[in-house]
Length: 115
Image 1: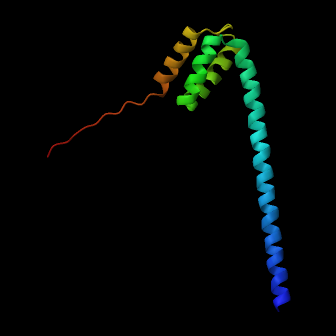
Image 2: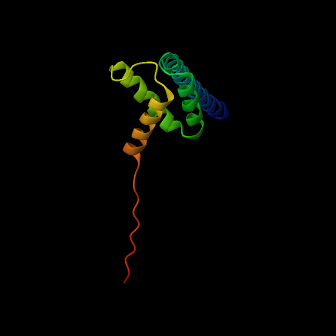
């Protein structure tokens, strides 16, 4: 009985180990894909942004990565659509950031009801 129990336990351990290895491999692949996409995006941005605009985006990425990501995507889309001609300077980037801020800003209103 102890031998069967040990075999069962070993089989469970083996399955869990295989599952863990599979998950780690998937995560590693996902991270590699994200790194590859990030490198491609950075290469595109290096070609279409001035150094000052890239610096502004890098600083923004440190503080508000989601806004920086949205701005990067917007710049790339605008250039690909032909609505913006490279090189995109800092002033143009600021205008894009202001537009993104306007479109994503939520106004909060506090109302106090007195009884």
